[in-house]
Image 1 (cartoon, rainbow, N blue to C red):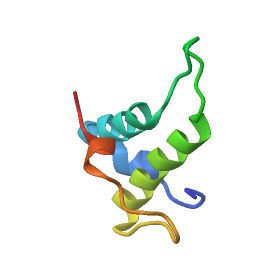
Image 2: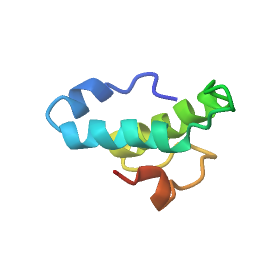
Image 3: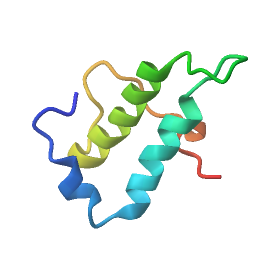
Length: 74
């Protein structure tokens, strides 16, 4: 999804956006009773969706809009 997008150049000068990207990953990630992730790839995809939208101004094709709880900072 992020191939060809220099997201590091975009985030380098905007640490708050990097923080939000991390928040998306952590907020979406689900753990089982043992503390093992059960949806790590989905959480990665949602974080990548945030980066894609931040860098291009639009959502990746076929991806739903990010919900408020996904981007919430605690």
